[in-house]
Image 1 (tube, rainbow, N blue to C red):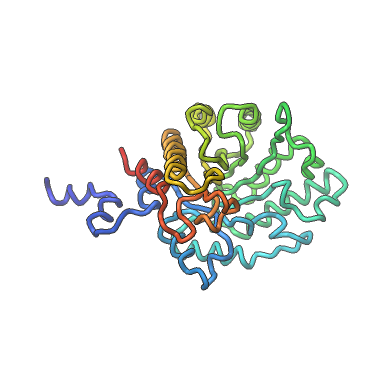
Image 2: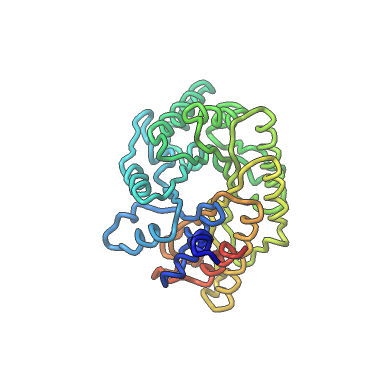
Length: 337
């Protein structure tokens, strides 16, 4: 083969192999046009655990501030915004060519007390608009992917919008309004609705489908949907109808992201059999993601000890940052054509 053609045909994985280095997650995902990464905390900058930042920089092409961008963290007092730690995280990522997902602008479970004290729809709508647009304008082009509304659908029969959300005061169209305000603040940003428990074909995913289909029909500016995928090793991508579900959202013209992935082990712990089953779930998840051309696959944490479900050892790296079988299960399908 012509040496120039041979060089042109080398992928990032091939280059890594030629140099004697194994490809990283982000190198493999880049070949698919996909971002891959995880949620990070302020310990990213903790000198006591340099391997944390090292793993993120080496393996991830996108990060999420685990708690730093939630309403309570940024605007604990009305119209007084505190950006310090989150700015540091965003700047760290920007310096390393790592993208940032903004999570989340509107979520009922992380609002300060003053939001609950608002008494009228105009007050709530004003507070929402101010928060969304202030935060998005602050980060500007540094953060171009946003979970605009998170977990608005209830788990009760029929899966209506949450009646106990403070944002219900703003009126039944508050989700539409939030997306419109976000689009006004940054017309180039990619805007997502994000939720859990809707990965497969079920009542909640039906409600989510109806919600976003209606939004599109009303001309609401939205890019896509995020499926959190907080799962356990007994989950079956096939039996749940997950691929069918993702495809119906994709067929609406929406982008698909898996946004908070973790796969918890059973109580019997990290036995070889349990780790193999965990790996299979991860393999099936990334396979479904590839099938619908997901733009991002994001895990909720970096290594097991940093996970909110640490006891279930749910991530790709163990407590000591060693690669688990699940790591290979994710990277292999990304490399296979």
